[in-house]
Length: 316
Image 1 (cartoon, rainbow, N blue to C red):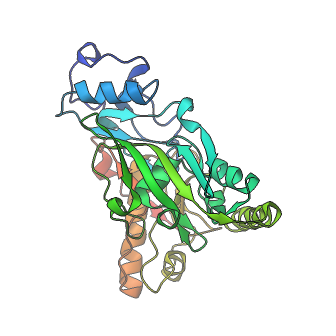
Image 2 (cartoon, rainbow, N blue to C red):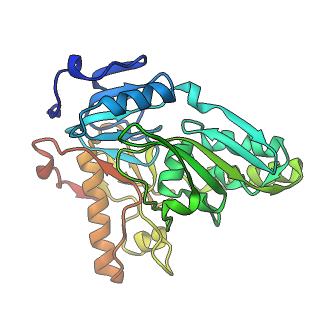
């Protein structure tokens, strides 16, 4: 069922970029599942985005989406406007003081590589984060003992009102895999800071991270990345494994046998099946260990009409 909330596209504010009605999200979301965006908006640049949001009816929700590497889009799609940033916002520049400035659409690996080439250490962990700068800033993405909050100095945002602001990292209210960025705000740029380092040593650490990911994670699968947050004192994958959920299936949705904090789409899974599998894992972990796992994957959109009926067929 297509989401329906806002007026005809002709009533939306003008945009120099593109607006797709019922724009496909499954074409690029890593799970390759889910319904369409009511309006998929690709602004030409920051000014275009700012003007569009300033003129957009405040009742219409706005959701920025990067590459969808840690996202479940429900099968009913997303009402309102989904923002995807253009390639022009992938630019990265090295600045004095061991700093790297990156556009909101830049990939974490590209930021890490730029820092390596400039002899800036401390950003190597971004090699292990398969998402954009915007997503990393919003969710305080991290890996290998480091978080985005450890390296972020400031962020440039286009607020839902269309106002363009630059905030210090201290204003983001960071905690584990969470920030207090306001709803509808779009990260269009970020300034990171590292420390002086040897490019060869930095590169070796990035290679180590890449090799570790390759050995332990299902990188070439349709997945949503790390599914659950690590509870205090525990590793989520160990709790999932101890609850007997490694390889657990719901149709073509499966708990990865390689790394059981990853959910997979084996080919024909729906978002409802993937989410239901995750909820079943949470239930079994709670029954086994008493620990309640929290989702790390962001789940957005509305359920299809029959989504409530798809919590069936879960098998080992």
